[in-house]
Length: 368
Image 1 (tube, rainbow, N blue to C red):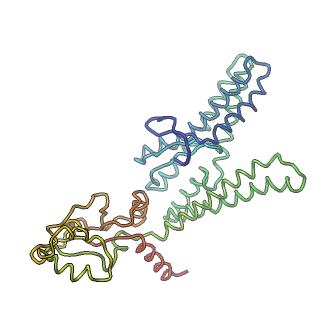
Image 2: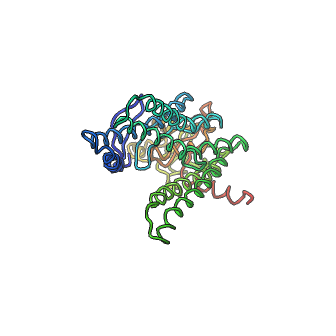
């Protein structure tokens, strides 16, 4: 998974660590280890603080994950990386309210941890290394919550803004585009706050802002672009992208007639979908299958006798949203799918080039 290291499962959710996490772990351990010079084993205290900080980030992501799971949304994984963590969800919530609660769950967990660590620290009858650790944990969780509430994608605040725009407009894609643009603005602001002092005065203390800004800019732009693509698919189903003159033949057609009509044509199809008299899908026949039959028998044999079943995973209902079909093609790394109606009637063959052509034609006819 993009070089990430799997370290196990958390509540049934695969848990990964990006290699960049180890760099940050070492850096955080060193930074906080220097604060415990008066305590015994200062670097162990620093390491413990670093690990507890990452546990706080993990708890933040689990907050998102548990709310998503409660809505029937599968969580593919949780990954810790350079800038924190991310929970990879199977799909979007069905409602803007659902999306809102998934988004805000993480910051709420961080705020709860801030209050918890603060209360424990205040209740301690002594000061020392443990009090310092609790203070750091409280501060970082508050900062994590406030930072993530910035109203721009890909941060939680951006997802909250997306849900609100979705609620107002009734269109989730408009919410993503709007929150993505806001995220890009914050990204540029963060980059400027890091580079301007560096260029004008040579002060590099805010350079980290520029890195965060670049992260926001890239991911917010990607989210807005993805939403724009999704908008193009709105209202389209698998049936809309079926080839008009696809490779379909009747089971009653003789092999000789098939060879005369289709093999000698310029279609260059290597497989044909076979239907019965009612138009129901029976399976497929590969051109190569005819080579196993003596030519003198072609007139007496029918296509139905050579039918082979089609994998169920390569068959989709005609009403399936086209965007889901595209995702299926990408996941399975295939170029075509067979489209049928609920009653088994064959609609036709769907191929990737036909989808692209459909979108291009739709873009030409859609008013600017």
